[in-house]
Image (cartoon, rainbow, N blue to C red; front, side, top):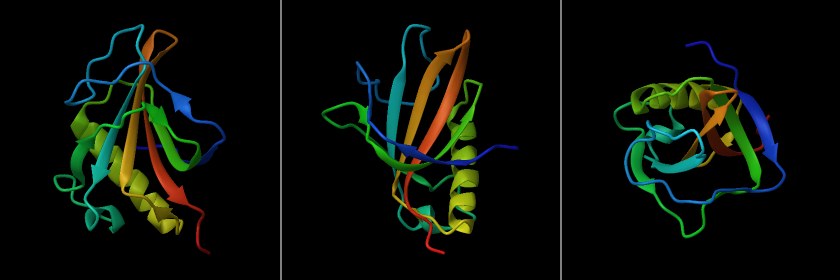
Length: 132
């Protein structure tokens, strides 16, 4: 999977109108934009070659639905990725972040939205500045 991974400084939070249902972020309606939040298994979230079956610890729900302002590693695919594809992408993004010496947080934000009539899957991984 060839992807572009960017360092993103989100200057203001992205707010969402409704909470997604529990479960996998695979189906989305054209008028919706959803944010899913997953806590990552701490030991796997620090590995260059994380185990795809162990990386996701659990889906998390917060009282307010927002992608907080801050620093992130970011990537997107203009496809409706299923959870297996999302995890593979997250592992690739994690490896690149660790390779670039970023301090990665233990959360993964997955945003699903419609853009130009197509579903887009975006991944945000909170991170500290690289430690070169």
